[in-house]
Length: 173
Image 1 (cartoon, helix red, strand yellow):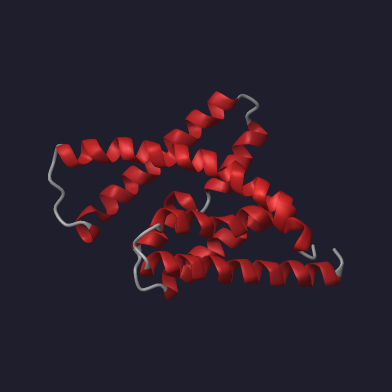
Image 2: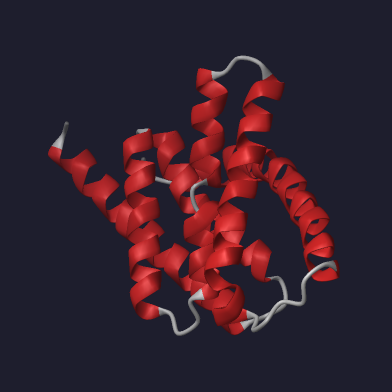
């Protein structure tokens, strides 16, 4: 690899990690639009993965997650980012390349999403939300999470198209 290209990719990775951490900080500070900001923090890793290799995208995801875990005062947005939202674009790209059928990859992503959100719920239910009343609160949470998943499935191709049409031509890669 050319030394100049390696320097540019390293700088792009560092800027992506800083941008992702800044967006996660905004998600920790501003309660409205928190899920949108957490999803937006994952886009630099998706863009880097698209421009270079998936390995660099995963590296950027872990770098952003580690920096945010250390620097951010509120940990719940960081945990949401680390449990699913941060690696969703990378996972979707990898599964789309491996599985040719739409429904198989979609159902696998849905299972991974529900498993990650269930793990996060049981990990943080007393820490973040206090005692959860059994029954009705959980019944309201499950359909809401499915709507979030569908929104992610729709928003990622739109974000990638926006990147291809408007942002990519301005990047010196």
